[in-house]
Amino acid sequence: MKKTTAENYRQRVIRVIEYIHDHLDDDLNINLLADVAFMSPYHFHRIYREMARETLNATIRRLRLQRAAVELISSTKPILRIATSATYGSPEAFTRAFTNQFGETPTEYRSARRHSKANEPFVAMLPTAREEYRDMYNVEIVDFKPVNLIGYSHQGDYMEIGRTFEKLFVYAASHNLLSDSTRSIGLYFDDPKSVESKQLRAFAAISVADQMDLPETGEVPESNRIPGGTCVSLLFKGSYAELEKPYDWLFGHWLPQSGYEAADFPPFEEYLNDPKDTPPNELLTRINCIVTRA
Image (tube, rainbow, N blue to C red; front, side, top):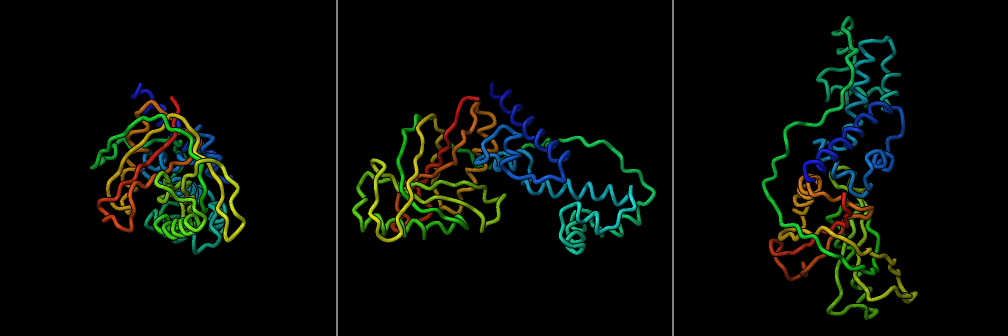
């Protein structure tokens, strides 16, 4: 089962690469490509990056530049037209990107290879060498009970979500919403290694007993809910700045071999101690992902 599941993940990522190659002029957005892979867009970025060894945007950029290289050799199209076709807004931006990938400017590349043939068929492949993960983690499969939440949306660097939590706790304390059973939870909608820092989306939340009507004073939090179901849970001990290491391992190594699929709900973290009075290397974070059987 595990081997079959891992191969299934690989074939779905290959299908995405082939789709990108065949639709380089289209709007290749995350939701469309996640649909091609039959994966949730909340998790697709991470799985793709770990299996392809590059981000989704890097693949799109690389394949568009490879097509541009073919056009430089096999056609007489002006470089500006080729740059536009590769979705670059100016010849200067195209020249920088092309030179970075090929080590030559487009003009130099075309001049040196004007009589070459560039009609080899495209074959989508993934790296054969597997990523070596230095750290391994213990994963539990748990029956997660639904949790009602209130909180604030956060956009920007995930390392700055603390200020959103601070605002939330001030509101919750002033309205007597905190108790010993209150849980601190963050929902994370994007992969920080694939999405620009300023575009990252998250939700800083605390648990509440029931969906409630909040007092219309100040900046009222939004309501949200984590559904119940089978859940993959990984306990990480260490600084918040190191959380990407267990994420990479979970989505790049454990999940493709597990026999499970990530459900269409974002990964979420539960913070088990208080960073105000806990040394960074003693912080406990539980990384959770709702899953279904593959």
